[in-house]
Image 1 (spheres, rainbow, N blue to C red):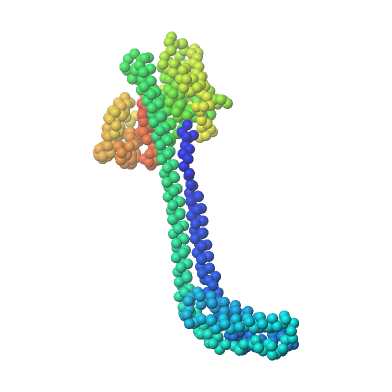
Image 2 (cartoon, helix red, strand yellow):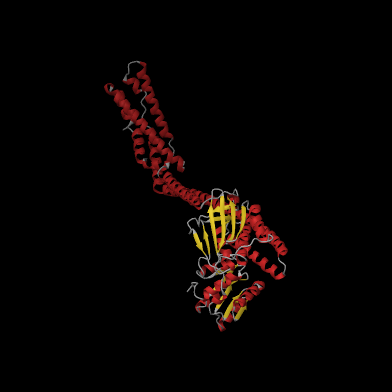
Length: 567
């Protein structure tokens, strides 16, 4: 069936996936932005170094001047009893000075401070301090006696140029921190913002690409589905046309007059139309067997409840197999009207649907009709019932001309059935009614408005309405003429084709009729999906091709007030 073929191989992305992807992308942007600003503002090496600049200068000034390294080293020389303590203090001064110089160098290199703000003499002084410490360690390690004279030879007087260099460096760095650093920080911030914008553009591009790809995939999926539906439609149309040709040929062999031929051929075509309407109404792949039987029997209905009874749970037949089954039911109903239970006022029909493990048993039992006589020869109807079911549906068909009433037993195998989920809890018994009686026709048939844009259909329906006993029929094919007519005259009832050409509908006519409390019936060939039908809930609607007895019954219903109208 159609549903089993809908595997296009196109990747389908759900809206939830798109939403999750966008949410993750936004979260990534926020995290990246926060992280970038944090790295620039909090983790920038210049920022960290600038925070410790005052302490760095103090450590360098102490080390280069007399109060620091030189003071401790001289005490190391002059005080033999405390040499270890002073040597450790001198080493500490040296290490702190070296670290301070490293921190200042970060700022110097990062912002390219004035080339005259060098650290050459400071480095030279610290190198001399390193030599002094190394020499002191060598003397201690040699095991020789450490004398003041020996140590005094390695002591170096602080370099005045290094002190001036430190002052010059401090002035330039202070100027940078007070003015230029703000500009530098802004530049770094702008660069970070640009980076975030670039990342944002990249992520948006990815999202747009993702959505575009999703749209392309969705469009490809819809195109594939449309192609499949068109192919399926062509297949079904070809089958219906071939079936119609066969019916025309077979009917011509059993009917002797043109009138009989036309009548039988039309009836069988309408049976096919019923099956087609049920399958095409919502693009269905299966059709309710119960509903198909009800529609085939409905043209022969009147006010006598219980004239026919349908028992059994809801089962569907595949739409492709429905036309031939509809013809079988039509032949059973036609036979009942001509020769069987429905040819008398008291006759009844019982239809039973029994689901089994391997299929469906359909029992057609007529009773309280005329005495049944076995025909001398097999007609088209009997032949169709007995041969079509096993040949095309793979089932079985048995006919019994019991004198008490005609009986037929049909078996449909599982391969042509579909469980009807919508009707699985439907009533097990359905009662119907019998042939209409023209003597019971309600009053109000003075004037009918018919709006139909197809000439052939309009002519046929006009003939129907004349046969129903309407005294006056006003026929129009377009909206303008019909609206002008309603400005001058109001009918008793109306039959409206929903769509008039490619752009017009009869909705304005329906609204005007409602304003004057005039009942009306919609006729459409577009199924139940029309927007006009949705706006007029409760109004009777008939599918084309319209069956004459059904149209008459519905008109009688709205005229007698049995149909609820939309206020």
